[in-house]
Length: 56
Image (cartoon, rainbow, N blue to C red):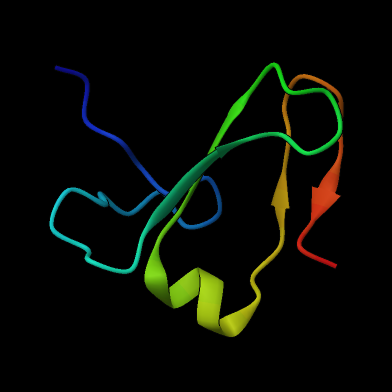
């Protein structure tokens, strides 16, 4: 099984109870992974497929 890493900070999220994984809200082609810290701090992520930037 492939290890998941936060799209923003690249931290492993395997033991992070607050992580979330979802499809890019713009294109749906890329799996966005967010660790709990980046979610709380609203750290920006960028979809490598379409260039969408979130969370704002």
